[in-house]
Amino acid sequence: MKQLIPEIKYFEIFRTSFRIHVHQLIAWGFHEGCCGLCLDDELEPSISGFISEAVWDHLKTGDPAWCQHYFIKDDPPERTPGRSGRSRRRSDIIVQANFPGRPEYVFEAKRLKKGGWGVDKYIGCEGMGRFLDGAYASRYPEAAMLGYVQSDSPGFWQVKVKEAIDNTASSLFLRCPQYDEKIIDDFPLEWVSGHNRPALGRPIDIYHILLDCTT
Image (cartoon, rainbow, N blue to C red; front, side, top):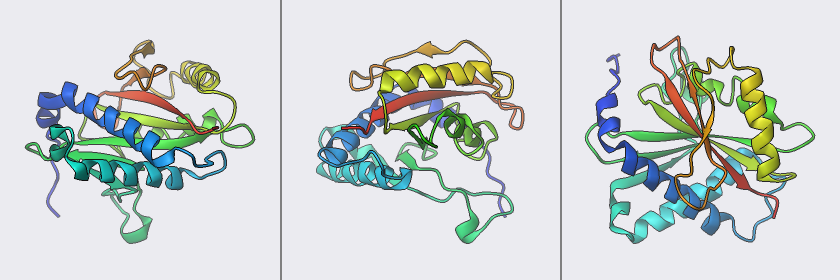
């Protein structure tokens, strides 16, 4: 099998505009695909599917013009050493651009709800851990977590997740203090955590976006 060589340079060239555009697509997808739906007991794949379908519908309109450069993938399988077919790991949402190298922005989603879907799963091996061990977004210096808030409020869970990341800083290879960064107005509580990835030898910045699924 041909060895895939990371082409980070392609992502770096377009990173600022790429970041803004994919954030806007997720915002449109959530508002247009989930408006009026009862999401407080839905699983991650269902919510991610609603978002992805709405994003795809929006991309097909070609408005604004930059939409022509992007594609959305819902629950796509990842190339995973030692795994094939249905056993392959699947990230929740990927936005791909038609720039050189076909750069991708990878989103992993986790529910945030009292009673079994707390911060442990969000920061754990099947949440943020997928980025830290290189299973997802190994080619890129950044990716994003989507928190589907199904109880309490986004502000409540922001505090909880931030505290959990700080309390497990060593095992999460946290390399610097977390910091707030608002990319678009739709996500006022967004923040970033920066991590080393010893298995890859390259760090990653994880953007955290909390979506209110309680209403």
